[in-house]
Image: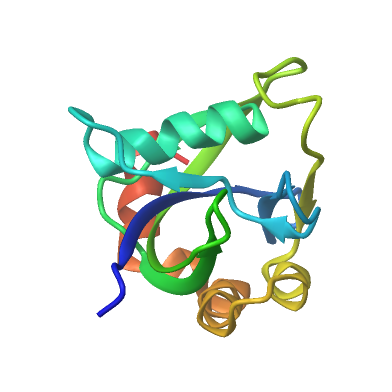
Length: 154
């Protein structure tokens, strides 16, 4: 039985002047495809806190992150030694307040705001695409996002 990797991801989001939700994606370091800031859980840190750290390191995004995941997706993680580990990723929505001009992985990644629909077309994982598409129409209705908006007074 192959091991199953558990990862966490931040879903950095904001609303534009027209009230349309946008999600911040970054390029992966190896293939350059568009992904969410994600990584392994961190010892001694809550999963949502680890996702918040990934958003800062990979995308230079700071803001308010939900303590509850909005969903999960799976993907095959290719390890440095060539092994493929099936991973399940828990996604924590984050309302971005600040984008840093300089951040840890700035030289290794690009970042860009997309509509959830445009982001869904750029990701390889079907269940991640479906998660993004649910945000296109009713992001304010998602209980986790609604609670986050209420917390931040947005």
